[in-house]
Image (cartoon, rainbow, N blue to C red; front, top):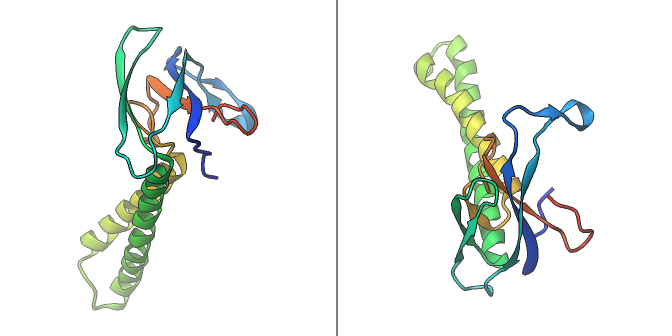
Length: 163
């Protein structure tokens, strides 16, 4: 589910308090973040992103974030989904080439076997990045599969939850 992006909303720039996670809901692992609430006012649609500097209250580090408009956030999200969709036919072709390899005439096995997991990981990573796109780029804001020391959470004005 895509994250709700609003023209004006609160963000929490959190500092991860522990290195090791603790048990979360449904057998997952969770980490505790503590930080400061920061009011985001996104630029108007069609305007370039705005640069903001925020100081972490826990470690004193200055963090720089670029905040994008709602339309630009939507465009960035769509671009990542399109990238994942473009990689998908290549993954299918690589899988067929591996199957054709056993039949005889096919590209070298090293190329096809190497491209299958690479393309799969690319599709997965681009899909995760698209789903996590919140229109705030910077340290710990959008990279999936990484556990950042600083992370950005948005508060939905719809129900007040931090996501």
